[in-house]
Image (tube, rainbow, N blue to C red; front, side, top):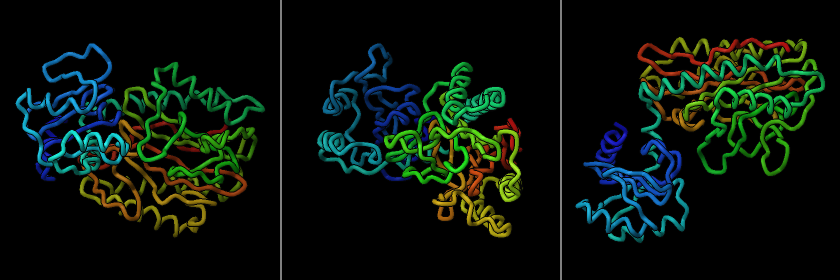
Length: 380
């Protein structure tokens, strides 16, 4: 089915073949990670060109030592050389690009990265069930967090305890993120003022991290009363991920601005769920959220304080930042089968980050929320 959808996309863009090379899209098109390529002609069967691992069998599998082997194998299989080849220009290094270009010297090369992003944005029922299963276990991990806390605990210790609980439930460990220079380990815990520390990465919120080599998330802050502890730890139990943020607090949070902002985050999601359905523009959802933020006088704290993010939600699947993007200039339109995380968050000076994040599936009738852990601030 995925090959057929890719072939339809090739017809629409005027290319006659697609060359897949990145790990995440190889997983999507081949069902497993390989060192090599998947070649999708505009008609016929896709071909796996494999360097490693050994032992993959099938009529559509050819082993190669280098990409220069591909044209001869295509000729042996009776597959005509493409006149226009779409490839993953967004992820391929310049040196690999020059080698591929040399293999197809008489072929026009075009960027096919957008084709694959669009294909992956709309999930099959099988994929959505994988996400529902990850969400179910995500909830189970968060339900254990209150029991993990002990006096004097740091955000890093809490992160390690959550990671351990996830692994024991079957988490695959890896938290895949697309995009240039995007990195994170397991997820993010932002305690108190660390939520206001800007990060170079394009995440909703930052955090100083433990070291300049990974400046994101927990930084060793000791968890104390009146401090918002935002837990935004990833869930990947099936290869398909979910995204969920919840706020915990040691004993209490009494700051009225923080409490109100947290409730507004929940209110925003409830209002968006009333209008979101197939055919609705993603930017319209952002605009609705922002209108509520302005009405509530919280613009200064929305999606950060010291540094504010320019989006309020993002697609989720085999990567954590797929389409659609909920942002003011987004051109994405909701379709049945899309899945996205919505995260209207606020950073309140002196308290930290508040608000919730949930993963939703777009259905014919609207949005299905699949992350169900309680959204109220959890007292530990």
